[in-house]
Amino acid sequence: MKSNLIRHIAVALDCSPHSIASLAAAAELARWMHADLRGIFVEDINLLRMAELPCSHEIRIYTAEAEKMELLPLERSLKRQAREAESALQRIAEELMVEHSFRVYRGLVPAEVILAAHEADLLVLGRSGRSPSCRKGLGSTARKALAEGKRPLLLMRTGFTAKEWPVLVLYDGSKGSQQALATALDLAQPGITLNILILGETPEEALVMEQELSSTITLPDTVIEYHHLPLHDGKTLARYIRLADSGLLVLSDRMKLPVETVHNLINEIDYPVLLV
Image (cartoon, rainbow, N blue to C red; front, side):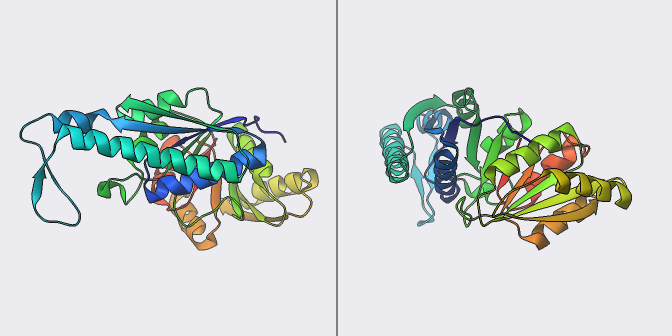
């Protein structure tokens, strides 16, 4: 099985913890796949517009008092964040000897990120951004990328690394799951465990799929484990993923599972997800 080659990786940066985790993962993948890396920073036009309004105030985390939003300080803050993002990109890319570039855009953040990553083979995003409202579930940029069908899409979070993560891939025999499996095989580095979760209509069908895969997949120095679950049980699937505690989840929304079920699963579980 062969996946589409990934030669150009785009990563959205905003200096949040999830963004820094995304950068680290994107750089590791770029090194592993001999791809180039492009950092994207977007100056939020909505924030800038709000700062121009006389009635706009902000409440900072470290104080309970509201402060008037001023345009010039906000612009300076965005420029500083962009410099910090570029510096982080340059540092890690040079450390891993990855070819890299950096661009700053201005506009609506989700739309600009997706537009800037149009020619990339992989878009890497943090599961959530800087906003406290995004701490649970996906942030606005991740939700838009998911809804608009940007594929492949890697949604990262803190606490995981691309160096040693185990991989869990969902497989049901569909073309989408075949692509997910091919991608997982590309990512399976020596010494990791590749978990293949087979979703069958019946236990007998799942067993047949396992036998077919085990006879065709040869991956030296990688442990491959097969697991079975009923195909149409989304709640059980989410519980299993949490119990398995397997690092990266690889799946497709072109499987036999309904698209809504796949997207709800991605939003619900707090793990890195690669959607192909």
